[in-house]
Amino acid sequence: MRVAFFVFAAEKNTLGRAYSLWLTAEELGWETRFVAPSIESPWTPLAGERDFIATLTDDADGAAEWADALVALKPWPGSLDVALRVGKRYRKPVAVDVDDPDWEAVYGMSRKRQLLNVAQRTGRRQLPVHDYMLRLQTARSEHVLVSNPALHRWYHGATVVPHVRAPRNDIPAHTRTDGLQVTFVGTVTPHKGIDVLRAAVARVGGARLTVTGEAPADAMPHERWLGETSLAEGLALIDEADVVALPSRPWVYSIGQLPAKLIDAMMAGRAVAASDVAPINWALGGTGLLVPPASVEDLVAALERLRSPELRTELGTRAHERALAFFTPAAVAPALAIGLGLLS
Image 1 (cartoon, helix red, strand yellow):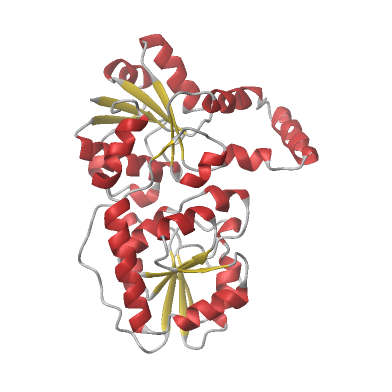
Image 2 (cartoon, rainbow, N blue to C red; image 1 turned 90 degrees about the horizontal axis):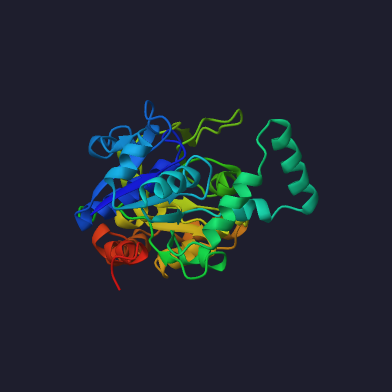
């Protein structure tokens, strides 16, 4: 089986979703190519994943002619429109993968804000009619993959194909009793709630915070800001953590987005403190501490509870077991095949 995946930009974090689908396709024994407009500067965190990077190509026609099926990552210009064009040319079926509620964030805007968005893009000669048509085509598509069940509210009948990570059993022990190492690994954006996390950690005596983002002007002595890291570096930071925190704010992205770093934390057997939003709640399955989004008080209480190595070990062990059961390439491979119509 040969599958060509289309991404709108190889230098963006959408390549993280591509990497997850590549791992799952490898499990199935499929041959893959990942098509992007430019492949000169792949997304930094994955630059060291040589086997995956070797699948990147900017030859859309060549990939489509070679493949048995095409998959567009995100219903966006640069991915879906390209896949549809070459799919029609070479008579190849096209599926769509939706890993974030990107369009739903636009639809969730007020009517005034949507009109302003259209006006701004039109002024930049980026008339969005084409974009909206791609979204409608996705909603009507026979084969749609989504990264978590929360996206079903917008894509009924889609197949859930979550992010995956290679299984591991070398789980670091939870033995630290002095202080608490709290870690956030991922892209720092407003809906990730880093301000809430900083406020909470500052109130937990002896706690230290590590964030993979650029240091703000008001960075505190107990905070470590590392900028963008590679996948391997991020995994090492997770291994060193007592608690991996995902304090997402209650916004459209948060309620429809499954952070891949949550799967990393679970696979590493780390204790997780996170906002109680649908995708995170589903993935953890009761193996972490959930708090109301944007609540500093509740996050402080959760971190205080996680001072206990025994509790961290219990939660981490359960999270690891759940990750092995639900978020490995072997566990997810049948769903990917079903989603592309290859299995009944």
